[in-house]
Length: 357
Image (tube, rainbow, N blue to C red; front, side, top):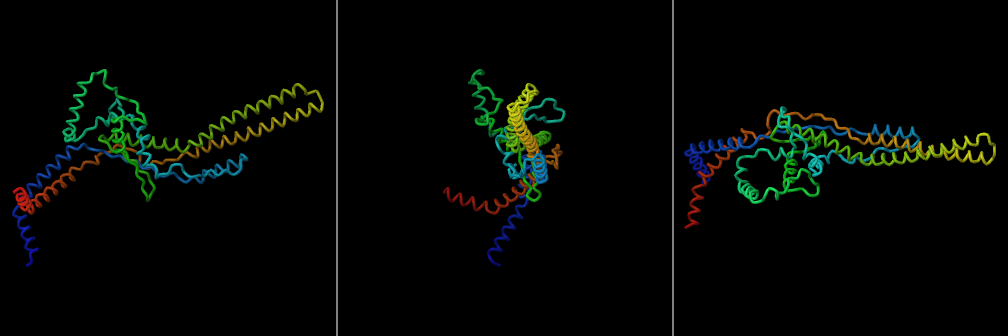
């Protein structure tokens, strides 16, 4: 029998002799795991699943047919998407989007009649007891500052938020919102999953629903911006050309009324000139009116379609923490730690004694 086998038999024998100690450490570890699991506030997760936007080829063909019907030629309405699904996680995590979520009203329960802004709710969230111990020195310093600084000299708490200049408190809240909101893309199905995780189930559902609504408005506003600008420009141009057409129409009508019984070549020439000017003005006005109608259709065509596969709903059970997971993890760690100490602890102590002496 070689030395390795003898060592293994010795270690197994030593662990068997100390099995009661290992059991005790396992029980203590399990108790520590239970205490930690109870101390960590529960967190509830809500997921909303959105389907990708359908192909716009049918809409593009309809728009091109409409253009041909108005006599504007073949308009190619198809273009590259301004925002695709892969950009949604970055939009959710962007500061402008998080600022829009900053003041959304939330309620902790269905019976709450008073709604509070999300920023206030985040400030009032619970923390594990050890966080209060860690933050105790900082809290004491803040308390002393409040005592030393007079009431009228304290900076007023800002309710408004500036994108370019966030206060430390605002940035801390925005970072917490960022950590609680997520967007993932399922590469197989191309589905977008918006998730929200907070300590209250109703708040998680409200924030998830608000995030989806604001995301839809954000994308619609972004993708229709160019089409709306074109529509606004054509509307202004249409009004101008309409006034010009009415001006030439009125000039033609007034000239005919004044000279209807006079048959001179100069009068006929002027009638022809005024009529041609009126017809040209009408053609220009009519064409711009048609372009304006197409621009309005383009705005509608550019609006992305969101189909909510799984809507937001209040979760019944927390996603974290799991008491069983914490109990089992700490019990295993305690048992492994005690076994390691039993096997290697004596050698470590002897090495330390040699170093000290």
